[in-house]
Length: 126
Image 1 (tube, rainbow, N blue to C red):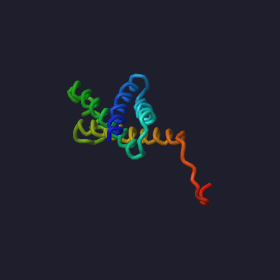
Image 2 (cartoon, rainbow, N blue to C red):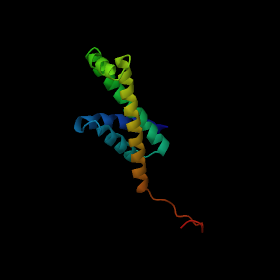
Image 3 (tube, rainbow, N blue to C red):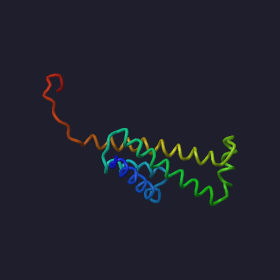
Image 4 (cartoon, rainbow, N blue to C red):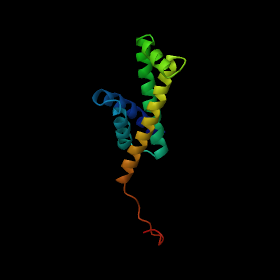
């Protein structure tokens, strides 16, 4: 549980920093790198990225939306036939959460490639 919380915090920090260096896909670099640095099981890595990036994008979209009195999000919501700008903020958070979760899982699989495994003495495994 402690490892998951540390991984979640590192996902948020690295994703936030990487957004200033890279375009929108920088959060995926941050989430993947965080799960490489703090190794966890696949499901935990997915949810750390999911909650970290989803929460980060929700907070950032909400702050931007509040700063401009929901003008931009309401206009974009009208283009998508949505009823309010807050729905656009939620869609942004869900999209970020999915991208973060998949990036965390990708980082986990990358770290597993270099992890040493025990050799089995079973005659059925080569």
